[in-house]
Image (cartoon, rainbow, N blue to C red; front, side, top):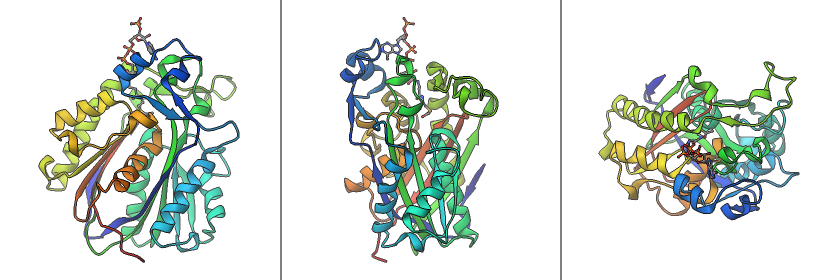
Length: 331
Ligand code: ACO
């Protein structure tokens, strides 16, 4: 699915992220699996990640980000009419985490639902919220992306434990006078789904006790390096832009090698690439908003700049968005 914006200017007017307090370094993981700091850094670029405490669930991590994003947009919960939460680790299947957060934020007028698209969830949710605003169905939307993958990792499987982390981010979408989203490209390849799966999580294998993430890392690596490039190229062409027009590139923070490969193939210079995988690992749906919020905090997102985001993950799925940044003006 691909499309460029048809005149409706919708932008991000509030942005924030939140991670659990507890830091696990690579050395900390050596007590659970047979691994080394050297192996993890060399193969992934990851040095540490945050893992939630036993009592913490998704909404505990995501609510502070949602609250701060609203504040930055100069809004309160009651002002939003749509809340989409992209996650594969909701507090529980129902009530949905979005409904729980809408209640906690005082968003009594908001339609609220969770969205499942693996690590690409945040990109899908952005596209949906954009569509709702462009169609006039929503005036102000809150899009949350977050995961606590530590809860569904096998802490004895070194091939998955070392690459993931917990975190969340949130954005407010509103109509803007300048800039805004230029287009989206979303895709899914269910044939590759078996390379990253959670077998005991639904109605197919509900009676199996196995509810841990399984991954064929090499296949996911090949998929990721391919779609980060193809999705970006398709979207840029659709929007009449070139790689040279990109000011800031925010790829899914899965693995430093994947990011470097994609940026290299696309021809995006290192100084334009946002990277924080070294400190947070792969936070799934939290990855892109977490990186975006960090880029903003570092003063890297300026008025009129073109920002490209591309996510990919379980499904297998992928999704890109191109946005001309609008600096916030107090509401
Ligand atoms: N520590 C030490 N050794 C390890 C570890 C570890 N944590 N994990 C695997 N190994 C070993 C393997 O057992 C293997 O040993 P062998 O040669 O004796 O069999 C060796 O290291 C090489 O294993 P590979 O799997 O070939 O290593 P690779 O270079 O492919 O790196 C990795 C593995 C990091 C998982 C890589 O494949 C990768 O990043 N894939 C993409 C994963 C990903 O991004 N997933 C999520 C994307 S979607 C989403 O965000 C949900």
